[in-house]
Amino acid sequence: MLAFYWFGKIFIEYLGSDKLIAVYVLGAIAGGVSYLLVYNTIPFYIERIPLHGMVGASAAVYAVLVATATLLPDYTLFLMFFGPVRIKYIALIYIVISFLGSVGGNAGGNVAHLGGALIGFIYIKQLQAGVNWGGWITSTIDWIRGLFTTRSKVKVTYRSEQPKAKSSKATAGVSKTSQDEIDAILDKISDRGYESLSKEEKEKLFNASKK
Image (cartoon, rainbow, N blue to C red; front, side):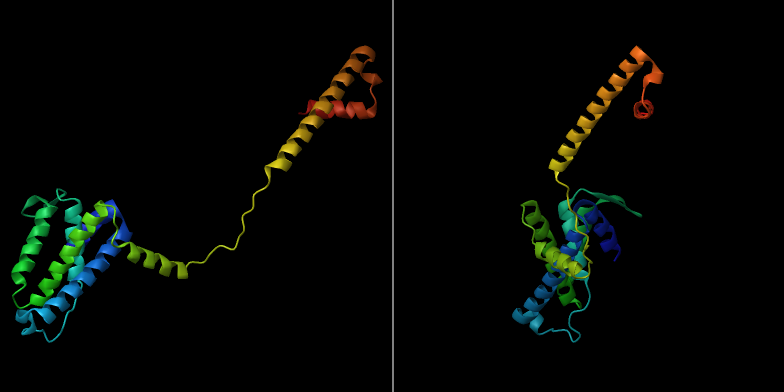
């Protein structure tokens, strides 16, 4: 779980949580398939079928671990008592341990580890080549999320630009007419004085002075 936490955080930083889920699920499937294959096809394992079957998610964790190490092999972690260590060597140690344990007491579990590790490596290599093996997993998750997401019922409409242009033109016409009237009123004051203005003209002049 510590390895999953450390490597998972690095993976998410570069590829996001959706792809982490995808490689995790692929690792679990690959581990299960590897387990079933060896116990149904290889005599050494057929004679040693475990009573309790396959339990746990370690194959999925191995997929994340190896996928991260394949993506960023020279990424360095600072380990207690060891100092800086590149994650490709950490992943390699895990793989070697599982390989050696594939003929031991937990042979099936270690075979599942190797299956998960293999799919983690292939997943990143395919992703770098432009092929996303986990796309169907992401799509399925998005579909499930959509079932529980409330869609907005608010309709968005957009006003036509034509009436707006017409309105602007009309406003410009009114503004021009008003300015002509003000000029005429000012000319009248110049010729006859302020007292010669009518009540309506005085009101227009007063309103214009406030703009």
